[in-house]
Length: 413
Image (cartoon, rainbow, N blue to C red; front, side, top):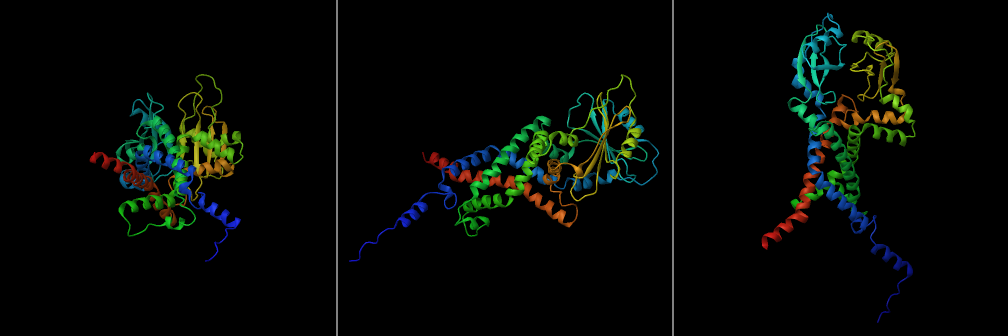
């Protein structure tokens, strides 16, 4: 009869290590992972409709400039010609023809072969986000198109994506929901980890499985591959809702100076003046601003003062691959034309530079307009669709695992 084999202390320790659940080998048995799964589950249920709406609308807006050109391009054609009217006279005409509306800004007013844009707000609702867009011929001042910002299907999609169709209140609600979506992304990565022996199988879809298993795999695989980009898009979306807190946090994390950073994001106030002091007209103000643009291209956008304390501000973008990153902003006093501030974002602190990339990251335009840029934006369309796909597959998983058995038991009883 063979003698029983003795068990060494090292064997006992190895057995204990294997038996004890760990994140490395059997994360499904770890209590903390189970708790995070519950957080992920209920966040997904609560935010499912938001994920579908914000994801699909975001995917549609990746190519919004091309869509606007396709929809409105023919109406905005301008033949090159000498300029016969000043901007001040054009703005005066636009406001005269639209009582109760005030021009608050001008865009694309330098080119002679492109429609310029006047942005108007109703005097009775100065805080509204639904601006009136009046496109005009910069050469003769004639109106080419007059529409509301949220008119048409594309305008409705933009309103849905940014404001949830509820103005500034919707923007705040969307910001908090985006924070929930960020937690959903982070918890999803934790929940995805299947253990060291199975992680490679969780990177690809498997064939020959049931539709329930395929739905599970689809949720897991897609969630993993889009996690990094989706987290970046979500984080930049939170910035749009809470710009100052997010920007301040980024500046602090990069050990920047908040007081220095403020000069790049907050416009100054006008100098004190006596009541009745005349205000420079638009052409005079623009001429002063252009003198301070230095090596920057001509201003693309001009902010027009509306009330006491407001200033003229011109914004010019340097030609770069990433949109809206390298710019010069010039602010002048509306009465004297004195320079109040001139900043070049190319020399901004690191934290401010990071924040300036948020818009181009959110919409996938950081790779430019060439072939690579088109591929990146096409990928961003898929990233935009992914929250809707993950919401639907997640709800199906919950139905298959929880609701369907309850429903079947209820039917039997």
